[in-house]
Length: 352
Image (tube, rainbow, N blue to C red; front, side):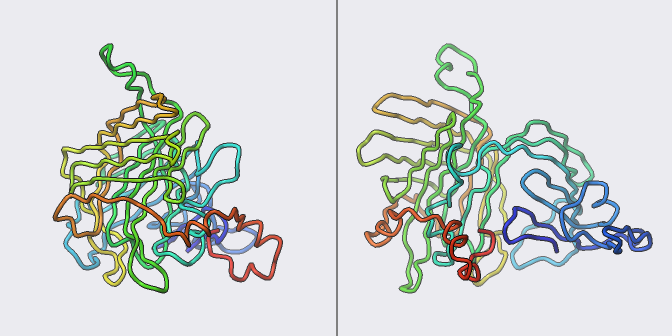
């Protein structure tokens, strides 16, 4: 397994190639039988029969179903999958002028709340191919998103909306589809998060928008967030700042049944726990000082629900208690703290 505690790189060689073992390709005058770091495409193919490697700009792999599956019934549709594509990140998490932020505040970077979540790339474009069951799909300039989750498991209940492929809806009134929005992406979530120490859960939510160089974050620390989500097919989330200067509304729908997927759970391992689609119709509006500044639509939205129970419509709002608000109001640069106080690096969370 290759990986890094500080860089966005991860990979594994599940089965090396026998011919690679015979050839004993060398690097630094030592036999290299499986990659221990990111390598170029041809070297990876020469060394690895089944495995993968991924960082912020390159993703490559070849995996197969081996007949051993975790609990829960999800039937295999293909026996193998291969892929290779390059990515051009356009937006991380935060404005272009500032250092990238921790998603959901600096406390989320520490091993306190469960689970942990970081948006790595809110918007990007990729070129390459994916081979699914022997059929190759090639793509160019495809919208791309990346996030990282870690901890014991996903929340007990959640929904997720993500889209970075919008067109302007201002122009729809004249007939036809409006022009493409070049710099617009949104990620919106609502979830039940475990509280540390005292037990129980709290309701949290977030809307994060990148628009023409600006970063608009609606978070319970300083915004009111409300949503109404059905078991499947309909999502609505709104947020506004206390002074009402900024307001956002995201409405999403999906007519297809979506795809049942496995997700990490606390106690049940990797189990069928969520349903996803990338065929969502997403409409987003943003008002600033009562003026509608964004009116955009997409038919390629990512939508998800997970956990449960989902017997009825989930109508809720997100709000932090005063203690959490007070902590988050302190501007803490965790990277700076660890750099200024080297002994504390022993306690630095992996991946930060």
